Length: 203
View 1 (cartoon, rainbow, N blue to C red):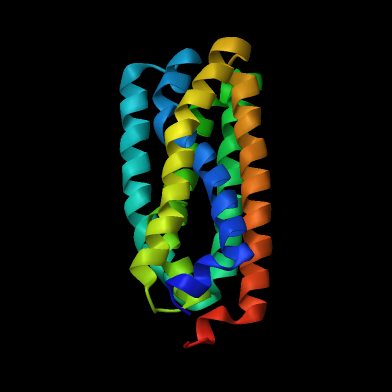
View 2 (view 1 turned 180 degrees about the vertical axis):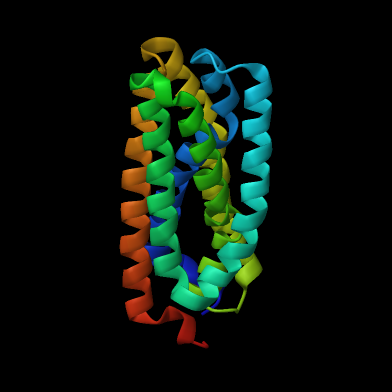
């Protein structure tokens, strides 16, 4: 489709804005887990093991993500990412209200969120190529990635404010809202863009 025509599409900008919201959630989920687990009294050794589990799951998630995009398509792969990310946040909230499952929840978080890593590592490039075609992909991806970068940069600041002001429970509920809003919008516009078949346009 090309850079000029893509950036003239309102759907492209809407998709980018919803991915910014997802970036807010991903920032907190990726960076704040150690502080949170320490706050609910999981010992440092276990936190380190949880982090290692997360890293291994990320390796599997990166490889598996490419397989998912090839086999079930962009929309279905991102819908699965939506479910995985919902589960991760619910697990963190559950560990606050049910302390007896906090360690199990933490390891389950590491696995689910690690498997979900493709949603922000490989997904942007795959989405831009699939939805808008190969022409000028690097330029289109560059603009799209700025939105995620802004969301990711702001995410820790916003999350930190919520933690300091209201505590971790409210902070994770806010992340749950970002996931629900961000992915709902993203999936809607992926479907709408695919209907228009922008990727098939050559001029």
